[in-house]
Length: 419
Image (cartoon, rainbow, N blue to C red; front, top):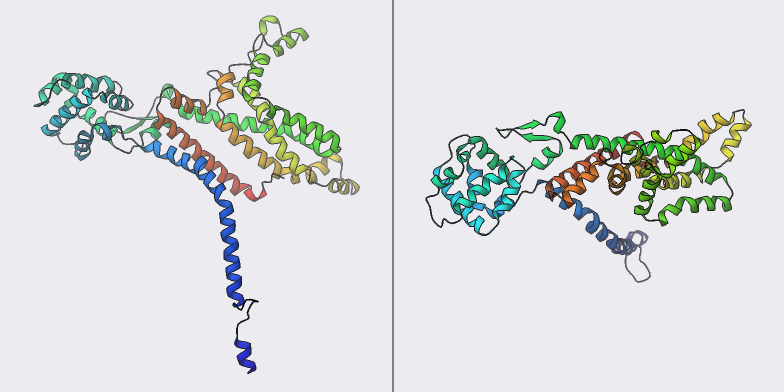
C-alpha cells in the first residue's frame, strides 16, 4: 500500500496532477507575455523590418523592361550573348517598341537603359519613333535604318544586361564600377569616382565627431555626477535644452555664428586675433559640418556617460588616495575604467547618428561637407533613381552592422551600459 501511494502523482486543489497544472500555468504566462509584446513586435515590423526589407529588395529589383517590354526581355534573356541574334528578335522589338511608343511607356524603359549605356535613352526613343506608326512588320529594315547600333554586339549585350529583372548594377554603381563595352565590370577613373570617397568621408567625419563629443562630454558628465543634486539638475536642464529647440533652428543658428561676416569672426576681429581681410571661412565646408554636428550630437554622449558615472561610488577613488595614489593615478586606474561602458554606449549612439545625418551637412556643409546621406536623399528626391539610393543605403547598413560586430568582438556589447 505504501509503494502504491508513493507512485501516485501529486495533485493540486482541483484534483489535476501538479506537473500538468504547472505546465499549464507556465504556458499561460508565456501566452500573456507574447500578447503583451505583440504591439511592440508589430511596430518594429512596420517601421523597421519592412522598410529595410523593401529597401534591400528595391536595390536589386529591375522590373522596367519586363513590365513594358516582356517579349523583348524574354528574347534577350534567351540569347547567349555570343552568337548572332535571330531575325525574329527584330520582329519582336518592332511590335513591342511601336506599341510602347503609342502607350507612352517607352520613355520609362529608355530612362532605365540610359543608366547602363550613355546615350541609351536617345537610342531607344529614336527607334520607337520610327516604329510608332507601323502596325505590322517586317520591322528589321526599319529598325536598322533608325540606328545601325542594333547589330552591334556590345550594345545588345548592354541591352541584355539592362533587361534582367534582377540586377547588381546599382551596387556596382554605388561602388564606383561600371560595365565596359563587353558588359564586364571595370572601375571608374579616379576623377569620376564619387560614392566610395563619400563613404570614406562619412565614416571619417563620424569618427571625428564621436571623438570630439567624448572630449567635450566627459568633463561635463563628471561634473554633473559630482555636484549636489540641485546643481546637477540645473546642468541637466542645460544639456537637454537643445532638444526643446528645432534641429533646423539650431543648424541655421550656426550659419549666423560661423559665416564670414558672422558673430564669431566679428569677435576675432574685435579682439585683434585676425584682420578684417583675414576672416576665417568656417561655413559651407567640412569645418562647419563638424562643428554643427558635434554640438547637436553632444547630448547623446553626455547622457550615457552621466548615467554610468552617477553609479560610480566616490569611495573607490578615496580608498586609492588613502593608499598613496595621487589624484591622476586614482582617476586613471580606478575611476576611468568604470566609466568606459558609458563611453561605449555614447560612442555607438553618436557614431550611428552621425553616419545618417543629412539635414545639417546639407545646410552648413556645402560641396566639401557633403556626406553619403545627402547623396541618398538626392537620388530619392531629385534624380528619382531609387534603386541606386537603395543600394547606397544597403551598403551603409552593411557597414554599420560590420562595425557593430567588430565592436562586439573587441569590447563586448554586454559591457555597453546606458545606466
